[in-house]
Length: 305
Image (tube, rainbow, N blue to C red; front, side):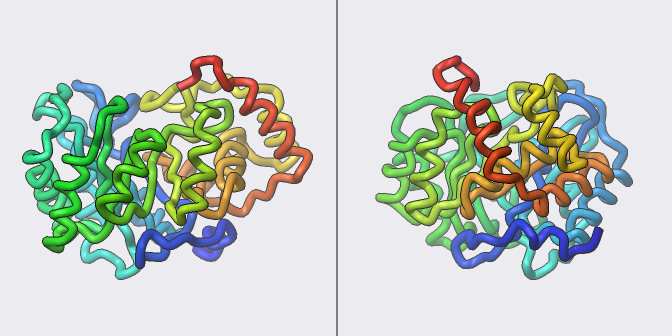
């Protein structure tokens, strides 16, 4: 595999930054096993650094991270800094604010508007940067985001943040945010059979020129614990026809939902990394897409999340 493989999936512009549509999610980087839990087993530092450098060698220029991605002894942001600084000019690092964890790994209440600057500055410190390329406001619930997003818009005006995005949001949140400042991306949980009710929102993002960036597109309901390993017969059959893995089929299907859809699969395994990047060149046939689309919509209204 060469660095040209990644370009088969095409590119998208996040504001004024062009990224390859296959990116890298750093959530799994800091530990072995389940992420975002206290007492996680730290990943070997050398392996994490190797994976990050290999990702860039393969053409990845969009990395998704957060200051709350850490395990005992390991922080995803600081691993990124260690592995990749001085950063390549084309590398876009997107981070998230809103949630927080204390040093023991326990979750804290989501940040209030006045606390968001501190979270942005912590990301800057850990990454060793003087500005952040993309900051996503991650929320829980359906309440107004105007005050919190407005606080981030002020940091953008101050030059600490280049572009803004949203995470775990609903359509009315995008409307609310766009009335305040430009939004370059929406990160929501999405994949085959995972939140099919997001289909319309995905299309709306495309119509507005906003990237849709699914998370857990491979893991699905396994979430931060990883893929559950019970792929349906339909996914397995399509994978077999292409000599691919079920995970690659899931990524390929996600990318074929629209040119504005970006993938950020995460791994700490160099072999899984190479397979994820290769999925960008996998083209599913019209018949295969129809089968997988039917499987996807079967879950509409079933409460999948």
